[in-house]
Image (cartoon, rainbow, N blue to C red; front, top):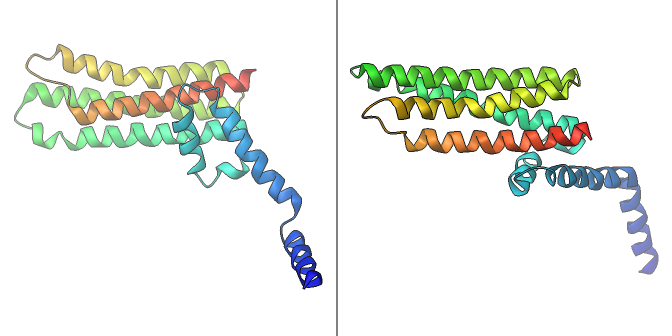
Length: 180
């Protein structure tokens, strides 16, 4: 009985090389230590651990993953807002506001795309600048609504704005870690 237990333990040990186990553990540590430098640890860890590329990513790779999350958010928000243009066909002011807001979110996505290029070039100052721009474009959208008389800022757009801000905040924290 004892010899069969030792045999099973030996098979198990040989099946999972220690480097694989250490690598998985050290990557979890990289995610956690990277996320500690951000303004939203729980969100950062959750988002990164849900991406299948994270287990093999270094800090720079984790930044790229979060930038991708932001690009998806900004692009889907631009599409969502543009999709509401047909319902605003009779309201010239609302239609113009929605067009402007959709463009701002598209610009946010473009800024995040540029951030990927900056990351590849290790131009972290430019990357930070582009992330800040992406984070600010939704603020412009909110201000456009505020200036339009009789319009209120839609709850769904507000929710999406907050989500993009949270994502950009996490990306900024990761970029700060890369500069250290």
